[in-house]
Length: 127
Image (tube, rainbow, N blue to C red):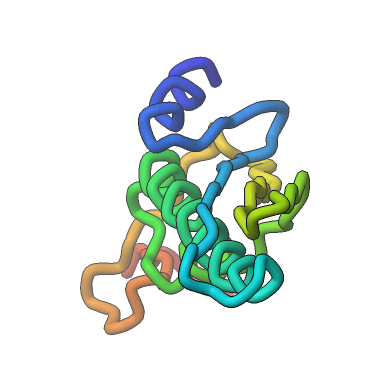
């Protein structure tokens, strides 16, 4: 678990007690007519930055995870600790549960067109 937490730390995300978290921060657009309008773009930018950190951390934890599966996990991340600045800036944390971080990732089926498909041994009997 410590090795996983250290590897995740390089992505800018944190792994603590089965939760993968990433902080996103964005400044307000100074050209916006008001702080409320600037906040919309700042929140979108902060979420995008946090999502990039989560995606990088998932790539470290699960290198064989397909792009579509990784995107689904990142999109399901819960926003918390949202802080709105008076100038329209935004700070937030996205987190998602990672129940089986130390479990081996499923092997990728090289012959499948679906990158998220798990490998199946051709010699294995099927019920």
